[in-house]
Structure formats: C-alpha cells, structure tokens
Image 1: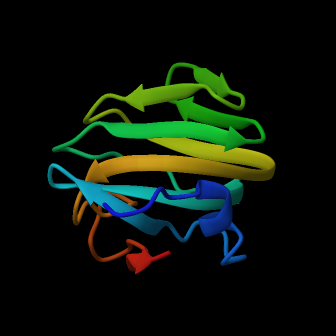
Image 2: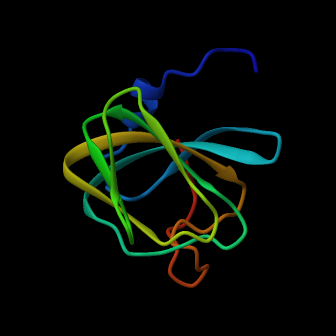
Length: 117
C-alpha cells in the first residue's frame, strides 16, 4: 500500500445508509466503512463472525438475549450463527471487517452490493 487511508475521507464520499464501502483488503478480508441509521434486519452469518467498530455515534447491537451498546472507539464481534440486528438511533459511522464476499444480511439474495470507496 503506497499511502495511508483516511476513513473519514472515505466516509465523506457517500451519503447512503446501510451500504458498506470497501476501503482495502487484507488476508482475504474486506475492510469497509459504512454509515447506518435506523434498524437493520435480523440476520445471522453461519460461516463467519461479524466485526463492528464504531467510529462515530452510538450503535446498539441487539441479540436475542441482550443488547450490546457501543460508542466511538468500541468494538464487538458477533459470534458466527448468532442472530443480531444493528440499530442506530442517529447516524453512526462504522468500520467492518469480514471475509470478502460475505453477504451483509447473511443471505446473498438480500445482501447489499459491494462498492468501493
């Protein structure tokens, strides 16, 4: 990699919610930024954990038995197979890391298309 990557600069290039942008890859994984607001769908990933790092705002990750609340600089890894639903009451900026090609809804038929930032 020739230059550093500014996550803030990448986030400034789009306004859509729930539409992750890949900023780089490493070891077969996409490193993405995404803006979220509102409730995402309940879903699970059978084959991979789900990594969330909050850059800005407050994110609730609802699990079937509890809610994990994250603020800026905090991360949570949802274990594979665990049903979850991210909820952002106001705009939240996240960094996500997952194996390249992982559908964000856990189902290729309903997943958002991958875009580059």
